[in-house]
Image (tube, rainbow over all chains, first blue to last red):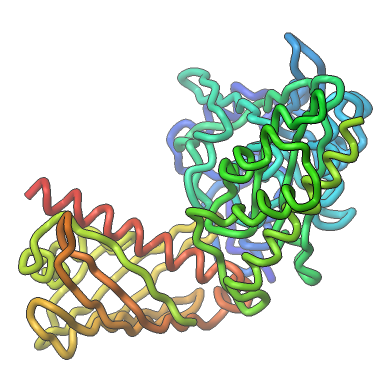
Length: 285
Length: 146
């Protein structure tokens, strides 16, 4: 449980941190909820750690230009307890409140979780359903990437060596949008065996807008477009919800491990998708 | 853990079969492989470095091609061990013509042990699938470029 020796630096500005990360050899440390355990088990042995924890201003949550900007170093606790997010982008706050346990929520960060891209992490389902934009910086510049392009594969994102996520831009929900995150919890780890994030709007008795993000089911989080299309235009009665939720695993290969077989996980995904849609719909009023 | 799947290579069957048994090509296409040297009849010594999320580790291992039925089927055994654990994959690859090339169907067993299995049990399946996918994608690229 003791890591291999490593150099440790804790820069006080983002520019300093980006400079230190520029050559791609050092590892950035955000909340450390995945990196530190892995180092303690000696599954990883980075030579140099750049701790982002002392950089001020990277954890702010503010409203700007019709959206909400969440600093990458905002902890899960800061996201779940943000009044701004609870009022204007409640899905993200709800997802954050479901992550791990209190200790993890006090340390882990939204940027760290996104950059790690664990296929069973909670956040990616909501980030995809919200169609957030991720602001990414390196020593040589800045770019903005859509969530759909960011999550490439298992533990693989669009981040290049030397790049850091600095901000996540989430939308302010239109009035009448119902949201919900439903999660089947792996009891030991707290990870999602299956997690489903839904945003939905209904007008004149018909569903006019639906976004469904899924995590835990396959090698990467994804948007269940087949479910979205099947439920849009419907009234949203139980039979229609069931029929739409049944499509959650279309074109997706289900994970299997010692806790849940592929078939079981797929069935749970259908059930949790139906629950998330029904709950989100009930909140549209 | 059982693993099975298919991948269609856009080559005719003989070329697909030969590509899948070409050690130089395999070394280039298997993610993380640093070297692959022939040590016996259809047996190769392999050094690979795996980097996956926060995990990184080196493995020494061997690759054996057995039971060849040109150009339709062969058995592939990949074994490796390192500080962070060990792994063994043993499977069969079946090749058959498809409309747009050759369909490779694989099925086999993957066993992983040591620290990496103790803490990464939930990720073995996903990781194995991703490695296989990356391997085939790279193989297509390399063969086309050759």
